[in-house]
View 1 (cartoon, one colour):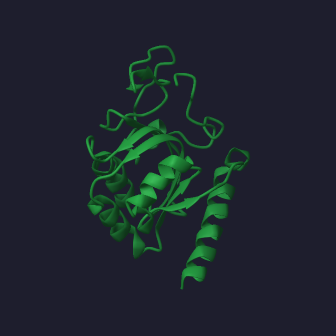
View 2: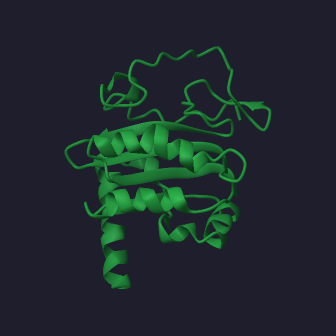
Length: 190
């Protein structure tokens, strides 16, 4: 797991540690000191911790003009024991919403497990962003993890989409692809 780095090809366009509106503003990273773990396996030091002992993230890109964020996740999403959704909502998402972000792309291909609890924080997150036309999309979540999310009926708040080639896009194009899919889904649902 220590070899899985957050996606880095957009760093010339955006870095959370240099964004004064980011919850990670001013954070410094080591390339050599591995201290965070998932399942007792060290993870790359570029991943950001936000209070969870099992789920880590990297804010890959934020556009305050178009009001979206692209966030990559790694680890185990554990609401039952760690209350990861509460930590994510309170430590990161509330901060982003306060700065006008209401569309969220969660790159979830490295989310290895999900353990559910209640859906209160998902509901709150959805309520906080829906009036602005917001949405939450998980991209490329592994099938077993997605099954656990859907069994818990979290898919009422988080949409699951596939985009195997997302790394070939620039952030604005990736966002546009997801936004277009969401528009088509909304048209289909209505």
